[in-house]
Length: 276
Image (cartoon, rainbow, N blue to C red; front, side, top):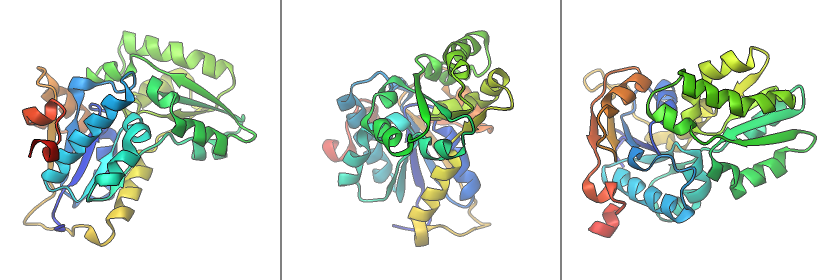
């Protein structure tokens, strides 16, 4: 794989842009290729078979497009489909998982809260993390239906978004949680609003920087060097042709972008290897 090949990143929607931003900070010279499966977001209430099929289709598209590594910037897709992807991918695949381990090591009150989608909360992966790192620590798991949809609309601090956050956070704070794990990449964009609710004494744990560092480690000698003649680029795709997707992704990426529609076969869930 060529050094100037892009890093492929995908999420159920726009939430993975938080991971993409962290990768850009960690690896400023790398080209990036991002796919938002916004037509099918959120994954949190989808069947595992559906999530696995979408992961196969999108990862296949990224590899067909020349990606030298795949970053699954979605907790739900990671816990459901990561082993499936690694079983056939020809390039390294980097996963994300709720940061329960570091949270359990830093809590002072001994109570850690995890905000995530319904599917992530119910996953074997989260159960394993709780078993491995929950000794002496109470871990409260909170599914948060509706938050992904708010971020997909770039509504990060509106009345409805705040009301949802208060509903989910209030019982966790009452139970003594002093550390909150953002277990869905979409929730990274809600950090400022969450802080206005929980106050400065509560820590938020976001794994974006750790995923970026792991991506750098997995690339190893495949990392691209700086090239003044060819500055790093970022391309954006979505399975949704909804009006306003450019504006939403530009707002979250903090730079104007043009979002291209995925090829119809991929948007419909067929991987390149199946359609070939």
